[in-house]
Length: 164
Figure 1: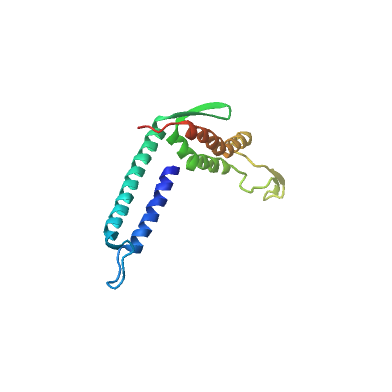
Figure 2 (figure 1 turned 90 degrees about the horizontal axis):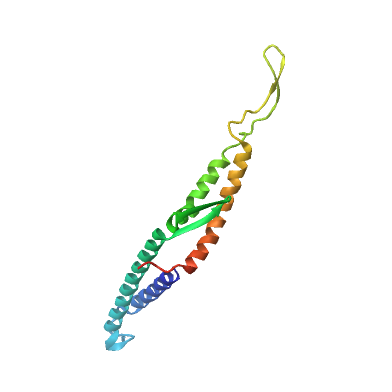
């Protein structure tokens, strides 16, 4: 990905050069003299070459991400997914599951007493349709999962060769 970023920066630099010398007024001397058109054509070709290189690199990264299995231990269980699945899990779906389990609440309800229509006091309790201990475990697991994925993928990205 560093190479892709570097190539994009080179393309932006070349595009700036093209924009600055691609035309001049008749009374001005072109920056590169009679070779200005040739120089601009070379820069445009370099931009195209860098774009093509980036496409090849990005496709190789996609192939690698789809074909490389990675085992990560989450909550004491080893789970194996390919890099692409872990990337999606990290970017979005660990948080979706975290948010789901975060919705299990008491909804602000209060326990106490109330009076019936006849004036008899009656205890009021909260009935939970979920296990609060399990909720807390799941929230902790999903809160930690992105960090575990990041740590594992950092090692994998540093040690995995790109697929051809």
